[in-house]
Image (cartoon, rainbow, N blue to C red; front, side, top):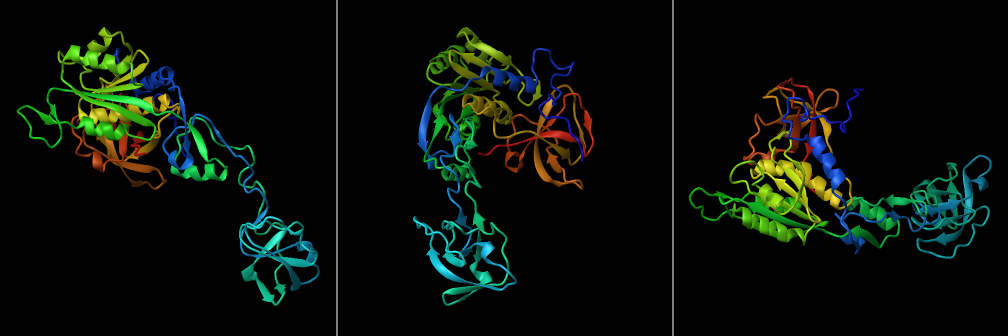
Length: 426
């Protein structure tokens, strides 16, 4: 068995000595998110069937034992194995009939069997159920040829859940499969964190709504619909979607107004160091605290995080692929911490490169990848794009996630282990 280094350790190499000193590593950026972003205050109580995608603010505990009584696992005959003495076969009189849902039970008459159905309570005095296919019914008697062991075909009290058992902890994001366990535990409603209020501000004089006739020097807006779709979830309320011109005063006024009404402001574009990058200067002028300003990665180096009043600000790059990648790395982590979840759905794991790669060292690189299968030892093998282009999204539909290539590596052999993060689609 191969022993791999822990993925929780800084593995991307973004903080290599030759990395730009003002930038933080991916792992340091995630650590600052974990340290600085606190859960929103407020709870909702929602019906269980409407809770998928919400984050629990209180644990779910079993209200009673499951099952609450010993019951039959199939249709058959309940008996006491102590009555089957000597060499078989054995003949027993059928003394009772026990359907599912029957309340009052008559204890089993010694030396007899009770006709029983799946889910019905096992009568006192019985310690096994013989399925109906294994007996021969002859009038009011049954003929049994094989001696069952005690406990055969009986679902014991609390064998699934004990009363008071923890089903799901606070901070758990409910999945469809969780609903079954909560219902079995007797939860009709659950207490969840209130939806996170998010505002999206997409900057750029050159962007126009997708599908509209393009003016000279303009491009279609990818970031708005892409991030609207990414942000949307039962745990999030996207309360504002704005597009803004590249104007410092206008951007500053909009962000300041939003800071008083939402928990998270997401911007795209305007976070680099050019003359037309106005978002960070506007935030500084408004008194924002920057938690990090730039990450040693490609694509997405300008991504930044800050706080203005009680609102968290996440500044994504303007190039669509860079915005998409940084949202998956940092945006989902911010939302998870705001929801009290602690971490996003997708977690990194090791995979094997399907082909060699040569690249320029200096920053860790995120490269779109596809899971291609498994090698001879059962490790996942990925294929990947020949290069990373921060503005190109045409290959996203063919990608399952991205590999994280270490900053210091300019060459990796086919078969090399790298970290991989799948895209989270739920």
